[in-house]
Image (cartoon, rainbow, N blue to C red; front, side, top):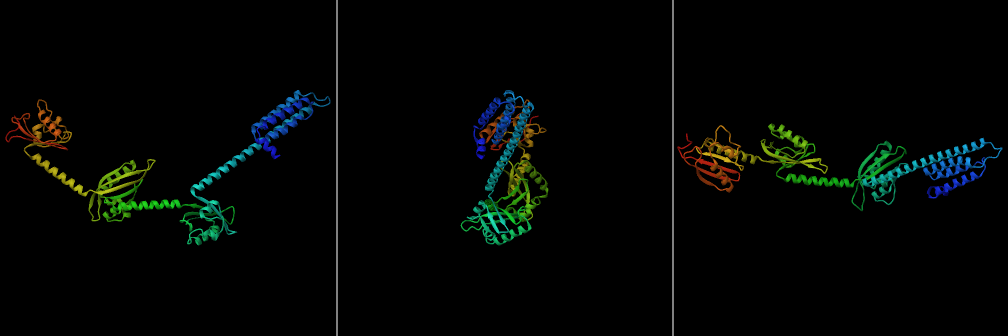
Length: 487
């Protein structure tokens, strides 16, 4: 029987065999008088088709059998005279019913077998996925039978523990870990069995032939099997190595940051300060933890609100942060700093953290203030001189003009600062082309010139001194004493 089933399932000639058998039964039925129960002979063929577990073959065999039963009724010789037609019809109807039932049972068997096959495939795939996940995560399994006091290891657990055996006593299992952890582990496993509370520990294996390996041990009481403790071993050495590398990198970064003259700080992606260098702490006279907790209190009161607002804007917009403000020093004075920060992005374009620095610019600030004071004094002196003077930038735009030059060249009521020389010196009926040409030529040549020009509305020539530089050109107009504008 098993050979017949395998033949029907695997042999390509099974369909041909069934077709020949159907034809043979139909031929025998057509040559035999009505009344002989040939219809019953089709039923075994339907059963054989069902054993093939091929739904199409089963349905085709059953359909052909039904057609053949009634085709034989019409082509077979008539029944004997004393044989009732009712019995002939009943016989063939019962045969049809048997075929339909056999087809239904066969179809249900095929459905059940397909369901079992699908479940088997799913279970196999699940096992493969679980094995792959265990390999990737470094997970292995073990279980403890409290009645036998024996620990059973799977192949992966035995390999992780460096053992050639897969069955150990509880004492032997505890000795696989570092000596100081063994007795405590045994006690905790026994307590887990009694209290049914899950256990999770990180331990180092005791391996004399190699470096110790960190593992995570998890254990829980099996609710379906009293006295059985199931557990997992996971190799987490890679996580420890990675954490150690990160600690080394962080320590190196902090040492580098502490050695720099600028004050270094970092912040989380959402703008929360999480680190300041020792340079920062030494400058402020406060410990780093206090600065991280409330860095804003170190700023000058007048600048706290605008600085915080600008920082929040940069964090929200993910743009570089640059601003000047005063920071409280250890001696109680506020010192100007230029503070900058850049967002550090990952491959997805998200901010991982902010890296910032604060540089003392108090000396530069004092120098800039001194320069501004000198410039203001110079402009005041030039404004009070009796000679006309004005300054132009690289675009030949007025950056300074004293009152005498305004009276001499343009309408004093019309502002000249910020306007080009051609705009200011363009006045209907007055020709300043000689002056503008001289200025343009001198700036292009970058050489000092002194020339004499007669300006519009002037009786006598004026001495024009041109002093070009990389930032523009300065012009001094000197008129003879006692001579000025006509009229």
